[in-house]
Image (cartoon, rainbow, N blue to C red; front, side, top):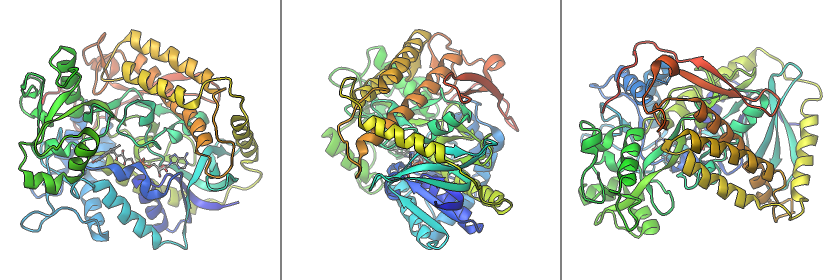
Length: 566
Ligand SMILES: Cc1cc2nc3c(=O)[nH]c(=O)nc-3n(C[C@H](O)[C@H](O)[C@H](O)COP(=O)(O)OP(=O)(O)OC[C@H]3O[C@@H](n4cnc5c(N)ncnc54)[C@H](O)[C@@H]3O)c2cc1C
């Protein structure tokens, strides 16, 4: 049975950064990923990563922009840590080999991003996530004696000891179907987001909320789950992302009448207001009949105003995406976009060291809610979040491991038997119920109708009922593949369960929050209401099936809530 000081589930940026930090602190580490690590969704991150590194910029300004962007729901102690530690993290990345863009003077160059009062986004063309992920993976190679990599292993459950501490996981080797118990002094969840609960989404097929659900099933609280980011520029046809870097380089948004409508909604920041503000503006234009394109369901993103040479250099991937997936040459014509599901601000509740209320369990990256993004994440703050809190979780877990012995006894045997039996049961289901893929499709389309940019009680209650029905249907949903080797079908059935848990927590929290804040706009409660709702919503499922809602305070250090204008 593999035993390690620190077991990390997920090998995107958060997981790999945590692994490097834990190994540097002297811990033995296992890092597990259901896909090859460099195929984690972090590889798709395009636009960049924020840090107040220029002499004229300050960490306080970065922190304030983040607090304001969060619509005052972000915890300011954690935001301060992130903004303070950002510059050193960028320099560290540059030193280990990330080829950040440099300006004509040879200095690290920046681009402007939404909701920021300075251009403080560092980038590698529009492949920033890929560039960082590959460099971290190279670094991991150096630690071959202390870091064991379990690539294409799928975690099915977390395991606990008699006292309720997390002491490892159960996982399946995807290549062979073999199931195994992994024992660890500490577990760090770094398993990413859950965008696949919506359709369409910018997120990869692997973003299925596994860690969120696994922690939830263990009794860990999920926080800020109602806060779901719709990115302002996703392709109308399929939800592919066109990076905010396009607007950062100067692209305009135009409605069907050709008007630069952001002048009306955010006269100062225009296209570079916060994402929630821009998505709401676009959706309002579309809903009020001023949409663009054949059915009026889109908005034009006009990149032709950016010099062509610059577009070809700094936005080359979206030039390809435009051609390949929308048939549009963005250097010549405006491209049709609309708001689309992109990111979840909520996740497993942690402190600023990544520790969850479950002893021995940490979380970092998109799976976690520290909460630095509150009601709305600023573009280019997520890569930063993964690295800062991935590192801190790795350091803290290594430290905790140093003062304890390896959990012993018959740990995980019950969970192993249960998970093996569950997989057998799924594989042998009669083809009488619905297909897994049909349920997933219905879930995604339904969430995109009812739990999107604009919400109301009726839509959310409907979503609640549908999620419950889909949960029942999922219990008998069938698959085709009955084999053991690379049986992705059976993993899809397990992932559907994770998605439904995530959707349930999201819908419950959205029903609970009776105000509009950040990305959560309730048509029936259109105003922000600090008197009653300046607090986090937590959802827990302590062992049972029924979810319970509770609240926790927002930490305010320097910045009292103010009206939010861009
Ligand atoms: C298209 C796109 C563009 C983006 N651009 C930017 C940007 O420019 N700037 C920015 O700041 N943010 C951006 N974001 C957001 C940011 O990329 C993500 O929030 C961040 O990369 C998430 O990193 P992570 O390490 O938490 O998770 P991920 O990179 O998603 O990694 C999750 C890991 O967990 C593993 N895993 C999951 N479930 C299991 C399981 N059951 N068993 C084993 N392993 C499992 C996966 O294999 C993977 O290794 C973008 C997001 C998208 C979708």
